[in-house]
Length: 213
Image: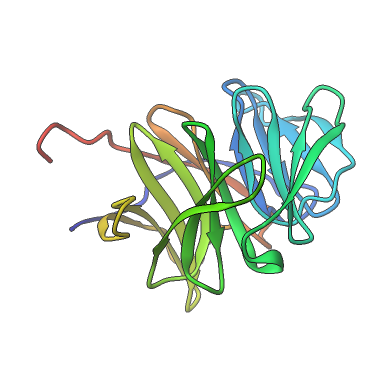
């Protein structure tokens, strides 16, 4: 297993409230702060829009819609209007945390259960589950790699795991006192990480995996 220290490239904040979920629409970062879903310009660091939507856990983007966990459910949202188009139950109700979109399905982090579920985005049916040995606080896919965030014993890390077995393949240890409460990739060399009660949002460098690494 490869282990290294996470490199914080940029910090945004303090923001309006604690950060509960993070996603990226290819241009702007979206972050959940409890009673709002907010859009931030990563270049300027300015919050451009806020939607009054319950948003107390993971956030994901499928290329057209935003999916947002709140009160034990996953809402499918039109980001232009803020309209909630569909709602399905989260696999573990109130215990769900991270959320990611990949290949037509949603991946849901389950904090207390230390697991990640792949689910049908229309019905909420669980397609498969993998286990972690740490609390799951964020989930994202990039370059066919499944990553999740952890926050346990006052420490956090980002983990690349085998999506079939949950085996940890790589870890990025977050600096002391820097925690992860939401995880998203920009599709390139960076992760976006929510900072929980610190009200911060951070960009973390990601080294692309070389062939045979």
